[in-house]
Amino acid sequence: MIFIADFCQVFCRFGSMIVDYNSGYLNALLGLFDGNIPEYFDPTEKAPFKSFLEKEPAHYFVLLDNNKAFGAGGYAYESDTEGRIIWLLIDRNKHGKGFGKQLMNHFESEIKKNDAVNLISLMTSQHTDKFYEKLNYRTTRTENDYWVKGMHLYYMEKQF
Image (tube, rainbow, N blue to C red; front, side, top):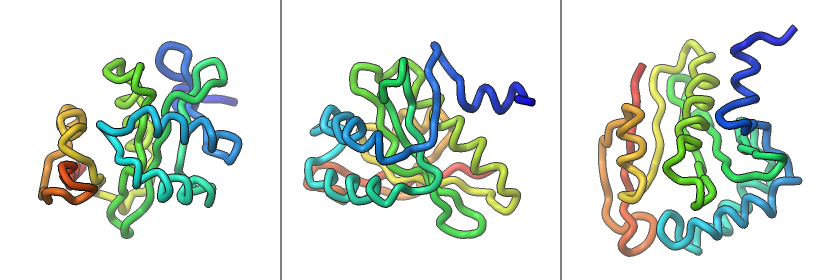
């Protein structure tokens, strides 16, 4: 029997669907990454992203529309009490349409199933910090030129 909550975690906004990542999505996600260079990612980040994907990480998801990947992201546990959002990306042509929020809601829902976790953190840049602020994340520290020259770290957290 499928429950409404379970259904909504898989079938979502505008007919899109969130599925677990597998290596069959590797090339599509690398293409999405390329589409977000240089504003959201630096080219030097592509190799670490590819290496991350090749390990087929747990808790990493792909956002599909008609079986075509147009977003991805996930989370990891930094400690028993902290979840960390990792490698969130959306097709540049679909920015501002609620898909990033959809993925974030999914990650948060999954993280909150672990009763010990009371903090979700993420590392982003000055190009996306306002997006996370709308989701009630707050910046706890910044570091200039962290990712590359001109792309600054915004470390953000949300407690619950």
